[in-house]
Image (tube, rainbow, N blue to C red; front, top):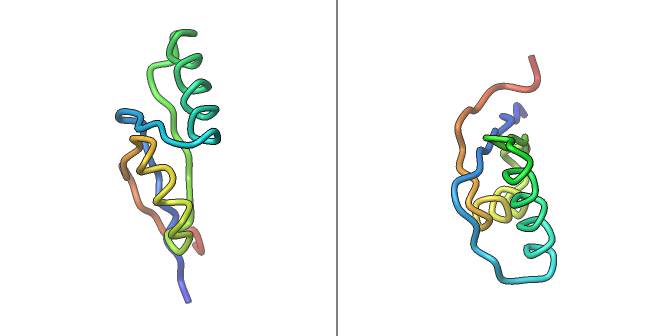
Length: 68
């Protein structure tokens, strides 16, 4: 089975839980430190991981085959 790696880029936060608040604070601090983007990678079969980052405002900006 081939899994794609999914890349997310920050869009806008949606704060609900303590974990989300912590990550949101780190995102805010990154932008306050003049970073203009935050990128991360999640395997496409990690449904809960993809959902978590989407809830934080990240969106898929690139997909690529990580088995090659």
